[in-house]
Image (cartoon, rainbow, N blue to C red; front, side, top):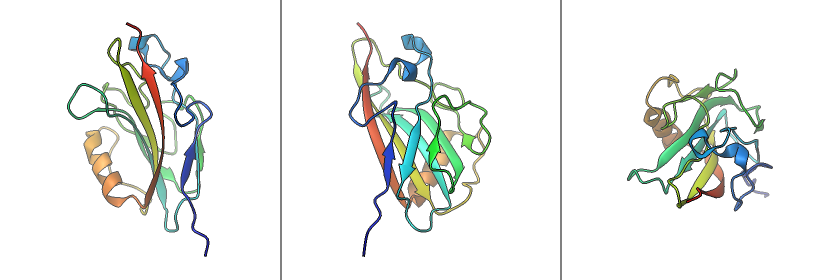
Length: 160
């Protein structure tokens, strides 16, 4: 019996890389463009996907959420770079920066932070969470229901 392996890849954000200028946030001088993401090997029973980008090193005590998107149809296996904040076919929540969609990296000067991009396979077509709801509601639904998750991690250091 062959076991499927759920994997996530990105040409813009290879695992272990340094974030490119495109994925850096406006406060750090970048354009805040979401990276391309591609995934394969979703487990049986997957009915939708969710995407998160999390900085566990942010000096908040609870990290910083740069991207939360959900209700991505199970037939989808990739998202293009530069996904519009109002893209059809998915819900994008409000990041910790207070804006919908992807918010690029902007760590404090002199600090290197990790950025964990994760795709989550879910057993439901919809989370039933509005885009305007606090993203903790979507994250709770994602993390308590995920059939599988796959991640890539990149770093970024702001200039002193």
